[in-house]
Image (tube, rainbow, N blue to C red; front, top):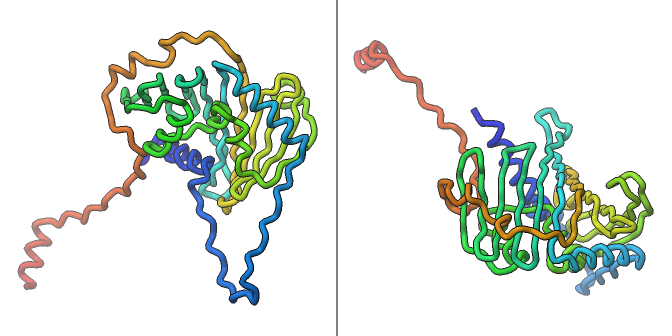
Amino acid sequence: MVSYQSIWRTLLLVASLALSGGVHSQPAAAKQTKPLSTAKAAKPAPELEAKALDVLRAMSGRLAAARSMSFTSVVTHESPSRIGPVLAYMTKSEVQMQRPDKLRVLTLGDGPASEFYFDGKTMTAFAPAENLAAVAPAPSTIDAMLKLVFDSAAIYFPFADVIAADPYETIVGAMTVAFYIGQSNVVGGTTTDMVAIASDSMFVQIWVGADDKLPRMMRATFRGDPLRLRHQMELSDWKLDPVLAEQAFTSLNAANAKKVAFAAPQPLAAPVKKAPARSKASLASTSKQQ
């Protein structure tokens, strides 16, 4: 029987890939007759509202200026249920980061607990319940490490844009639409400015603190997903430029755990059905018939 933990890990992998745009490929275009003109259609100019860009620049500037930070991330992924309507799965992570080369992510629930450490030289993924750790050499910056850990082990953190060296470029680099929605007094327990951005692959709504310029919530859907499943991230407990201990980015338990390869999880193989055993009587009967 497939365990709940196995189902959860598979779901989180798929959701993480979806957040990076890697799960659903774009549907094949319908076959069309050759157009009369061979000239390529001009790509529409981006529709970028100045006020929306101002909000995003202010948020990105506040994040990029922080030499260290800590926050809590609660991520909700949708997944179809066996009867059709979607289910919501949530994970909670405590994050500490120090530029340019330190990161700790402790994922507490709802699925299996996990820990991730980056100290500027090595990256470590640790599963406390199983006492398993994957350790590998790492690049010298958070941005390069995040790319490597995704490429090599399919580990993706939905808040990666928030801790990037240049959040503005990371968030808005490929967008084609940006507009200001208005203000909310509900999200994050403070007044927030709401901005929507879109690219060829996704649509995202972002809530940013009107006073502190910190991201409070992001909500995304992806054009390549035929189900238009929603992915939501709430960010809270912000602390900018806290003093973080050097030992926070290593783990003695992970160092002493059983080591495994740093690789992407493999899909669960379907159980092999064995042919029913034949009794001696049936074998004897078959022999006589021959």
